[in-house]
Image (cartoon, rainbow, N blue to C red; front, side, top):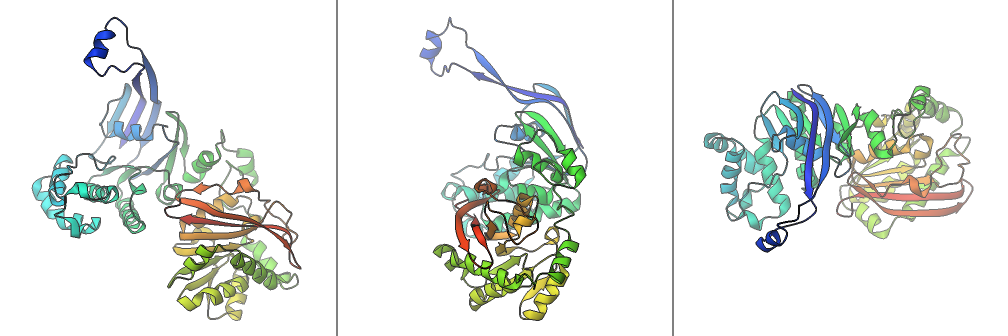
Length: 463
């Protein structure tokens, strides 16, 4: 469907700027010097029909240049590009709009620039207006709309084109949460329809959610090509190559296998733990203690936001549901829907017997399909050899807040195995979530001696 052979793109950057006639006349005898910038260097890539390809890399890595070359917006310096089908470019969606024209006029103008006939535009006009959510503004001048609304309009027009190949360049970074979800639903339908999609994004959750294959660009070179679970750790941790020794041994480190390890995180381990020693080591009281500790130390603003009406709250790693019950008592008065989830069906069966008024599920993290306003997790992440993988997975299912409590730097006297957390274990940003609160709490009690870290990731303006 798409093939690139030894493609190189070089931009010439002038060292001297000669914008006026005087500058040109004064420097007529001096030779202008240029610097060559390799935006892409010897790229070989083949994308099959129906493939959903993610393209990741740091700013300036060559991602947008690659899409512009495929869309024939610019020409390669050398190499060959072949594209077997019509292309719908979701690149700079506002380019081509005229600010002094109305929204209605810009729909016809932009559609014509994309190659649509007037009859085609008229047939899709109502759908475009409805999808963009701009019914109230059809007679308003485009320049009076916000940049986000303009991008929504451009996306709605472009997505209406029935093209077999889509080039998407970070267009979902603009727009509110509801519109982003509509866009994601469209991409899911495109994927089911077998369209070929090249998707550039810094949202690693979206890359992992949609893409069958991911390539990593670094300084214009194709560094890695493979499945998301192979490529994303290399981008996140900056390792030179996958740690094949760790992957082979079943351990998960920065660039190894990102599946949940089969030892400490296996269902069999947790079933055994809850069937034998959970009651003996006062597990229910421990769980309740840690949740009280987390709620007591929540920032006032976060606590009151969580008490808003009709929130959905998930307790992930709920064990026998004692912490979940505490969340239920704190927040259910405002109509919050509180659920508990754990991998162990033995623990979940006990939780259902103890608290029949709460919904509990024994579902592995990778099989969750729901979205929750708030996700709580207390003293669970330390059991995972790759907690960053777990953090990203949890954030994929979080709308507003992810609240967690973990042992900090000190050995956990309860768990047999644990991950030792430090301040660097918590990145300031993960996708479109920001670490908005971090506090280390000194705890001396019957259930814990040492330090606990309470952290909160939030989605929104602060991110």
